[in-house]
Image (cartoon, rainbow, N blue to C red; front, side, top):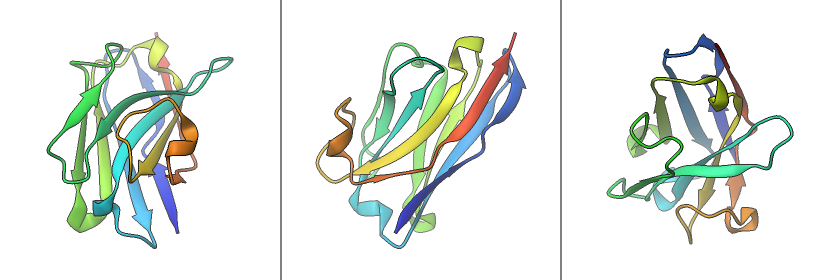
Length: 123
């Protein structure tokens, strides 16, 4: 049972990346999925989530209007489209699954975590 985050890489400011979060060994459709990121020297922060059926999404102000979260339950995968990337978006990005909460900064409310994928945005 695991979540696998992928799609990170090195891009220039203004460019785009799409991250994927794939579930193995369990049905993602029963879970809300959140994306977190942790920049060097900073705490991990949640910034986006999508409800189990995809009908509700949330974003923090730092990414609103630039990032879009979506899901394909048939593929057991959640996506994060990141546009207009900025150097301050540089971080390790994690996805997490929860049956009780969508977006929370309380880590233990999430049942599964992906291993993280590094996004580096150069200026």
